[in-house]
Length: 168
Ligand SMILES: [Zn+2]
Ligand SMILES: [Zn+2]
Image (cartoon, rainbow, N blue to C red):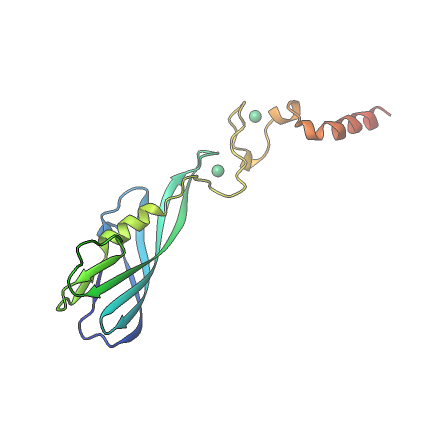
């Protein structure tokens, strides 16, 4: 992804980029396209980019093992200063550019932040019920027969009451 910065007026510019994920050299679990919404603030000696990156990725649910796709989002900021780099630069998000620079290339940053947006815990939905640990049935599709034998302790008083009522 390239942002042209030659002939850019001072002020705020809102830009949008939609490109194939291949452009960032990203492979699985990413697929399709990415969308980057960029708020570019140009000042006389610097450019600030506020970037919102949206990608699509395929994962296997940690609980039910079903494949699902997920929209990932990550926001980050980059600051470009015109001039020589000082001896020490302690931030990856601050870049020094020669004054005659006319394009900013963001592929590496987009790739890094896309990878950072992959969640540690992968769930097809927040309340995924997972698989039955006995028969392996996906409990999101309904309960299995094991459950009637394996009554959760919290429900035991209710079950006992129900049994009592049935006997009367
Ligand atoms: Zn699941
Ligand atoms: Zn079961």
